[in-house]
Image (cartoon, rainbow, N blue to C red):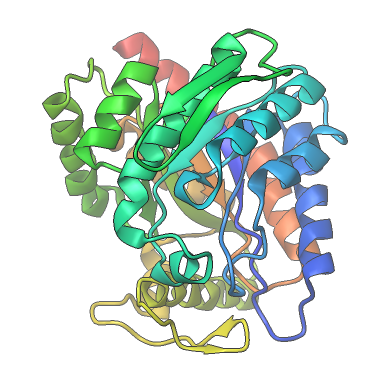
Length: 351
């Protein structure tokens, strides 16, 4: 079981600046390493306050210079939005400079406005992802690329830098689309799902759907599974309520970004309610918001039910100041993470 700290890098209120968000992220990554997290992830999104990180590889490169142990990865590179030969070279640079501390997540993307603004046809995203993946793998494992495909035509080209191991980094994939999932099976990748604010019971159908898709493309069992989860550790009632309000805003933004033209004021998304959304009171009761004991008990129960091999945990959705997020991160690392590691070891022994 790996535990990772996820960085979406949102501007959660009008007064927040990109420089503040980035500085907070670097501090939190360094703190996550000190607290014993195995890995840290950096999101990629464009053209809204939902995330100011247009280049997760660039952010990982910076954090590689201020850390020494923690694994670093993009979650995910939206590969259809980039030339894969460029991605391959940047992954190689990150691997070389970090001493091989790279995880690599690929995804097709899902926000139509990003594709429109970057002039990439949305309907080509899966084909571009598959071609791009082949190109990146050629570059990193052989040092040469020759690819004559539908979307990319690359004559025989040498690549100076490869990974230190000569192999692909550990791979993660953020889609259950059969063709891409089958490519993930061949690569030994871990599929990712976003549990978000859902309870373990509510997330069980998501796990089953991924398991069915995994079996359908010949994936070996037990299913490797990464889960994205939102949580905030606090015993302050006002902080907890603001965290729940921030979590509801995050859920609304996630739904809003599925629209062809999301409602925005400048870069700031308008929080539009959606059918079936949770209430703040429901999130306070059932979400992973509260004291360390509550968080540990709920997560341990989810681990037994959903059997993930990798947890990606996000705490920066609240709109609270960076110091409050760091308090949550510290309490999780000191009071919750050791309990979860023991629970994971006990489950492994029982299996």
